[in-house]
Image: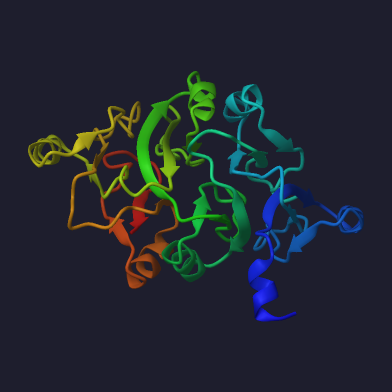
Length: 303
């Protein structure tokens, strides 16, 4: 095929997802035209060899992928029409029951997904974030004791973070999903024995309406400083109910000297901090679980 012919080929989008738990599943999915991502989603555990499969085409197009690791996380997904893949990604490994969900959204914030990747090492995570990929925020080995495994997506067009917020509990999830938000599927109070608090964001392809800086405050003095600098607070304590410090996320749009924020990750693997810094991503070195006994968590973003 000539270079000109290749250039004229229509873009192929991700249109279907599925998961295999055994050889019979793999045979069936191949027969149906699915392609395998050859990375075991149970890597580092004694569980089954589990793989993600996908189909590509022109339409309809998958625009959002979410995960759930408890029944409450699933309620908002069900009510807004997300499709569940009913196969536990931690099958045979212990840990949380983790399920993948996807939707083919049509809000102004939905941008089709054209490629997928699975990372199993911190340096891979860092390289994919820096290369413009977007992480699906749940460790697919969550509480199973294996490697930190993440699914990454590549979109049809460059996207930028235009809205960011956070919620406590699950009552408003359906409204958030319906309004085009993506939930970062890791609790900011992880292992702190408290309420479930999640960060949410929306994306745009319009560079005129974007967030250019993110900050985190873990005490009153830092909050006051960001307020004086013109940052906007997300009015949800990310540490709610833990007995620890009040922790807030702050953002700013009007920073002409800063590039738009393309994507961000919530880091729970401390071994990943250095690789993210090495590729030039911005790590906000303030623990979201400051002052409690929960797992240390940090935000990191790419511009």
